[in-house]
Length: 235
Ligand code: ADP
Ligand code: ADP
Image (tube, rainbow, N blue to C red; front, side, top):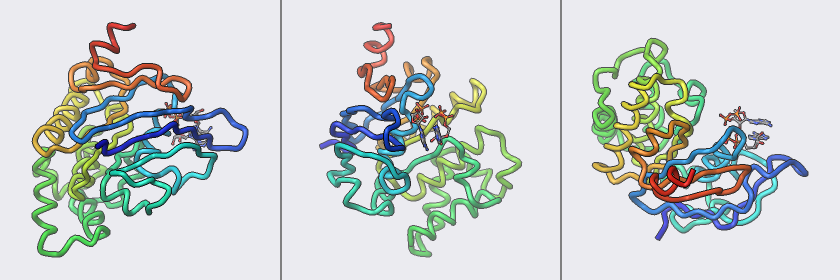
């Protein structure tokens, strides 16, 4: 069964405005590594918001169709329930992160999720390790590079043990080498931990190399979907 499924989903933020998503049907299976690409305004961030339950729980608007997360219609469950399955890393990680020290950022989510005291250290250290930033544990987030910050945001979500990780342009502010490091991390998370990855990304080379499947959005619609070879040789 798909872990996330959109069934004929249309959404507009405002009554009468253009649809940000227009009749999107899409399945993400457990273990997938899916890339989402498309021009600015295509609906990529809206798709991420739909998959992570921010729509309908955070945004008002006109919504048609259904989004199922692990079989549950996101309209019928709480955002907290959804967040235990889908962890999302927003585009603007500076607004997502709440603490000033890496360790505190990690603790914030773990405590919020009610993780038992005796499990917290293992989860915290494990997630930092999985992302390869154990050495940053006591650093001030403000002093980190963009790539390091991305990894902290990813680790903080991973510590909560989601089954799906949704990332909105994690490499947007990064140079090519750091972008590659972030994708290497996502690859590890996908392969070793079996976590499903959905990543919005504009760099075709990264998508080609790392993703099993690519979804091309345009004007709120799925314009094309397939393997990197199918998508990029299609033109
Ligand atoms: P991107 O194209 O990289 O997704 P945008 O500039 O479209 O970035 O959007 C940046 C932020 O502004 C997002 O959080 C998005 O939800 C929000 N946003 C985009 N368009 C509008 C709009 N017309 N009204 C209000 N917020 C918007
Ligand atoms: P992308 O991420 O592909 O750039 P978005 O999902 O951000 O696309 O935007 C899709 C459409 O929805 C755009 O027309 C954008 O202006 C609009 N939009 C996005 N976020 C908001 C928002 N918070 N409020 C109103 N309109 C928005």
